[in-house]
Image 1 (cartoon, rainbow, N blue to C red):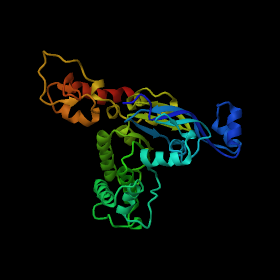
Image 2: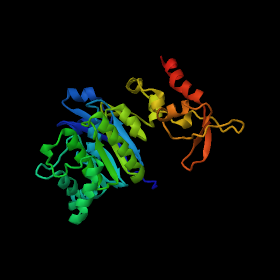
Image 3: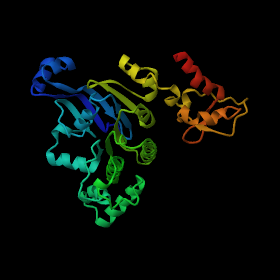
Image 4: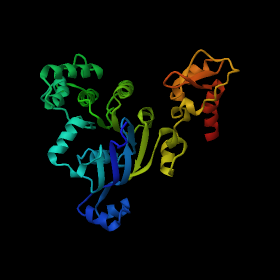
Length: 345
């Protein structure tokens, strides 16, 4: 893994309005959204500085109007930042010529936005194959790859439909398939599953995690659904009024909120949804008889609680090499799930 972050933002501001640049200069970087609004400016992103490592999935959250989509559009340079620096794999985006930027987007980035942006005169298959054709891949390989993607997103039998013949959820799946087809290094996803019904949404999340496990992409993923963020994220950034209030691993965001806003945002989240087994396991004890079941140290408690509670003996905890690194007792799971709730209430 390279030490250069794949995405790096340094004091990025995006302010909409005729006097945006002048006001930002005069404010010396201390931007108050309300003051700017009174002068006819809207603050989209306010002093965002962070890095995303290779293979990491950063989920950006916030209520509508918090600036999360604007931040994504600045990083993909669909919108120009008012101030600050954005680097992709060490390259300063502001220094790239238009042709270089197009090449970067075409070969490095995959994007799925809320609007599906499908080509209305092309079929599902042609829409998915389109970015591959632009890359100069031969027609046979384009169609073969596109067909794999059709199956992946569950649109078999609809590959020859036109976008107007699909539901909103189906159109969204075509958009997802199209971005997957290119196999980008960096994926930008703006609420890609929001139009899907809950069952399909869960399947797409599972599929997304499976793909990420295999492909190890660098991903910025936007959602307003906290359960979705917890399921997908390596780290979560929570935004309010253009400011990143907290950027941390899911467990820390829930257990150690940095601001009152984050605390309110996360207070309903049960701990077992974020804590991993390694945070409640005990050291190995050779005097104890252990269950034949084992669980991964990185498993989320909620996902394995039922299995552990069905055992009458402590369960071995293993690492990715199947080596035992500790044990977890059913009583510990009961305390974490029910005891913590009692303490919170």
